[in-house]
Amino acid sequence: MLRPSTYVQPIHFEDFDGAQFERLVFAFHACCDEWQSLEWYGQAGSDLGRDIWGIRHNGESVCIQCVNRMNLTFAKARGDLAKVLSAGKGLPNRFRIVGRATVSAMMRDRIKEHVQSMGVMHCDIWSGMEFEEFLRHGAESLLKRFVEGEVFPDTGPELTTLARTEGTPGDKDILALMVRLFDRPAFYTPIHQESNLSDFRQAITDTIQALGTGVWKARDGQVLGRIPSRHQLRDIRLGEQIQAVEKALAKLRAAFDDFLKQGVIRPCGCQQPDCPTYFMPPHAAHELDRLRSDVLRRFHDAYPAFDGRVAW
Image (cartoon, rainbow, N blue to C red; front, side, top):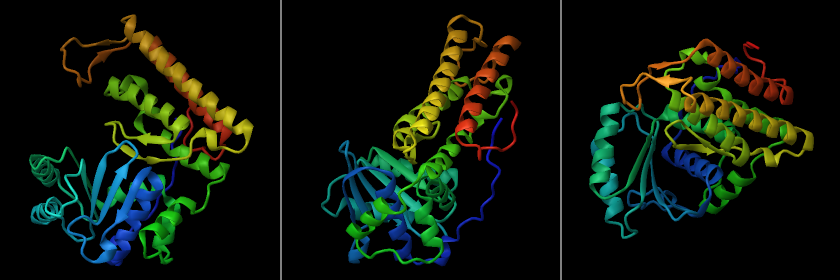
């Protein structure tokens, strides 16, 4: 199956100061999500633990704390949250920490447990590697400016304008972003080796949604960011080709659902929702592989640069 075969060097966020890091975090969120309001408090010098505060169009309030430090400690996270809760802005629906450090699973769980115990419904913790991946997937032009030392504006409104106008993508740029939707195990793992059938189906559904709406999600439902949808392609023929990819994905999903309903694909019977053991006869695996190859072939027809290691 098709897989992009590129390698990029990691970004050294430690080479940049706190204000530069905050500018990048603010610009990323302005670019990759839609907001009723998005404010950068860090620029004022007295942020009270809330570097960035945003209200999404669905009404969700998001407090974003930028931590450009070598280590993220529990004391730091607890202290910042305490400042937020005493600042008079109210309780956010989501508390997000964006840092440069690696964060262990134990530390993540400890911070999230504390945040939720204080009444905040959701807590996200992005390590430097995760933030870099989100940038590469959703705002690569901003990352390029950042790494090359191009100065970002000093105010929230100017940053928002930059994020929303930076390099309006052409059709080739849009297709290059769409390539990343297919760089996931659901599109290159042989069907008979797929370890989680529900994740496989969810990946197909998420890809259909991303092509049609631009909303890009991980398997766990977390929104990774936004990419241009097929509706933003200027070339009508290209738009029709990507719509055909979307329809081929829907056909793949429908065939998978039919095999499940007919009992052709059967779970092992242990009643555990995440059990990787299931029964699939060779003809079903072959048909799903064929339909999946058709999806990738159609995308390759629209964007020949999608040429990785091909297994038609």
